Amino acid sequence: DADVTQTPRNRITKTGKRIMLECSQTKGHDRMYWYRQDPGLGLRLIYYSFDVKDINKGEISDGYSVSRQAQAKFSLSLESAIPNQTALYFCATSDRRGGSDTQYFGPGTRLTVL
Amino acid sequence: AQSVTQLGSHVSVSEGALVLLRCNYSSSVPPYLFWYVQYPNQGLQLLLKYTTGATLVKGINGFEAEFKKSETSFHLTKPSAHMSDAAEYFCAVSSMPGGGSEKLVFGKGTKLTVNP
Image (cartoon, rainbow over all chains, first blue to last red; front, side, top):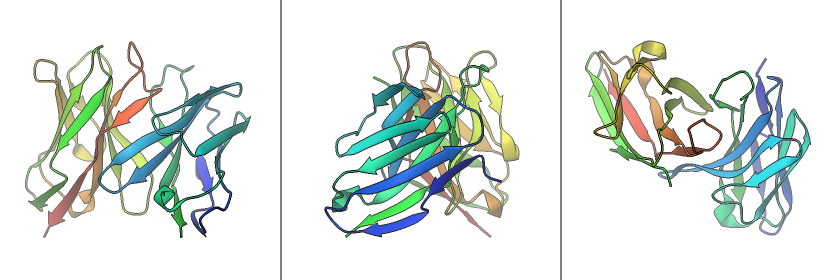
């Protein structure tokens, strides 16, 4: 079973629609992240959360919002989707408490905004 | 602010040949450096990382990388390429003061093709 899961894996939506991408983890990690990947641009950080009450903007947060419902769940919302938000979205987790500094990635959600 | 430059968006090698993927970084504090691999239709997987100590770091699948502070480089190598190494590779540097991977800054990636 995957430690970091993302739903849905693929989503096609229309401009102006609200959409939520969900991430769940069974690793017991305290820190969670949302990235987007665009061809030729690598991964860019959207939001990150160090614990349930600590949420921070990343490099490209405009047009996105997040919710950390529990330690294991971190959702990304697009309030009004636009075509340039078409991308591959990744959730990641890490655990600072054990001295680890590695981020573990989910399988990704491919989002297309028409 | 930290940044990462990966030289060459596409690299092609023959099976059995040396793999060399280049990464240069910019950081105002001692960096933590990472290489991740992304196989088609999958998420990113950690190959190796440098935090402190030995500058030659060995990772999974026969890959290794050497941290060279004077050259601000962290190039990834593998002596003999295998068909299964075909993937996209990302170099990353931590951006929190003092290191740590809480905020990773990624390079744009290098797609490796292995020819039979």
